Length: 245
Image 1 (cartoon, rainbow, N blue to C red):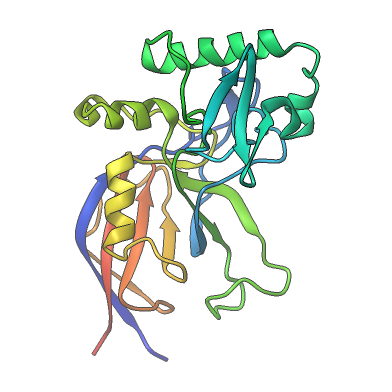
Image 2: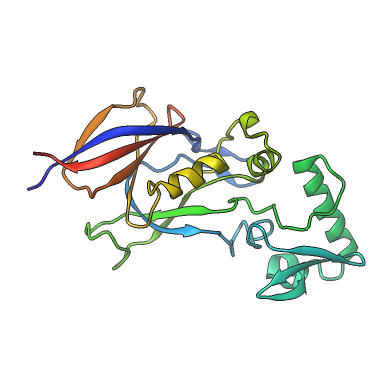
């Protein structure tokens, strides 16, 4: 059986969920980022249809405008009312002015500006998300009863805004609900360098680990790169993979 040597070549700041479950300020529980080895299934903008379907029910960067007091978004190439996007926003179809005021308040909270945004910058999962699954049969593809986890690698709206005004150095990554938060420029770099790529491995380590190893050995791996998250150290380490001779 082949054995693989993985050698650390880079690292980035990252923040997962708490080591034990606790309430989140938004009414959703914060849970630990799940330990294990996973395979990346997809990379792209995330749209929620469940409990996060208010702010995350619209893709990051979607065009916005006002039609009087009505918030409009470009959905599928056509301008529609925000309250027509999904059932959650649809609850407020008769309260268009209040919806628009709510959008203004949210934008002010992020940007400290009272202007109305021209792009949707409220999606909790940022401009791109990396989704992964437990590859039970080790064939590097999603099949059988395998499912994509609810833990993603993604950015957050406040960090995206700081990056957009060239203040990325001020970012202090926040604790997640179980996902892995990273900086916007870092996720772009990891994608651009091929570290985060469909089919690559992500390994989430134990919260108790207090050192990032320079090298590791794995019996199942695939070149050229693996991404390892150390939640207790708030770091992602990038490893180069090679067959052990």
